[in-house]
Length: 226
Ligand code: ADP
Ligand code: C5P
Ligand code: MG
Image (tube, rainbow, N blue to C red; front, side):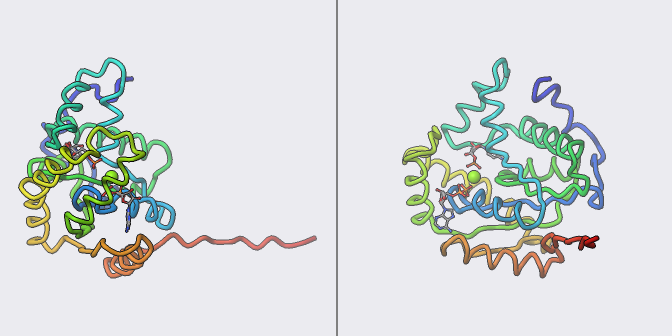
C-alpha cells in the first residue's frame, strides 16, 4: 500500500484520537540541536514510539512511485517546510500502524514537528492535541559545528553549509513562532542542549518527571524452584 493513500487527514473536523488514547510529546529545537539523539534515549527508557517527521519525509521521497518525491526533495534541499497536508498524513499513517502493531498505550515522540503554525493547528485539530513540547535550546554556532560533523557521514542532501544557513533562517522565522505559541499555553519544557548528550538527558528525565511522565519499570517475576 502506498505510504499516502489520500491527503484527507487535515480536512477532518474532529481529532482522530483523544489525549487519553494517544500521548504525543512534540520534540523541537534547531537543526542539529540533538532531537534525534535524545529521542533514542527516551525510547529505551520510556517506551515511546519515535516518529521523526524528517525521516518520514525522506522515506516518502525515496519511495518508488511517490507523487510527492520530487517536491519533498526540493523543500529539504532548500531547508523550507513541506506543505503540511503531506507531513500530517505521513504522521497519522505512522501512528496508526504503530498502534496496530502493539503500541497499545499510544505513546509518541514526534520529532521535528510541528515546524510551522499551520502544521501545529492542523495536527491538534485533526489528529490529537499534544501533551507538551520538549524544546532543545542551542546556539547556531554549536548546531553548525554538529551538523557539519554529521554531514561527513550522514549522506544527507541538507547537511552542507548552504542548506544549513537556510535551515537556520527557516527555524527562526517559521518554527520559533510555534514554540512561542505553545509557550503561551504553558506547554513548553525547555532544556539547554549545549552540554554532552548524557547531561542533557539527565535534565530531560528530571523535567519529564515534573510533568508526570515516568520511565518504564521492569517487573521481574520470581520463579519458584522445584
Ligand atoms: P537533530 O535531530 O536535532 O537535527 P541530532 O540528534 O541528529 O540532531 O544531532 C546532530 C549531531 O550532533 C549528530 O551527529 C549527533 O551525534 C551530535 N550530537 C547530538 N547531541 C549532542 C550533544 N549533546 N553533544 C554533542 N554532539 C551531539
Ligand atoms: O528534522 P530534520 O532535520 O530531519 O528535517 C529535515 C527537513 O525536512 C527540514 O529541513 C524540512 O525541509 C523538512 N521538514 C518539514 N516539516 C517538518 C519536518 C521536516 O518540511 N515538520
Ligand atoms: Mg533529527
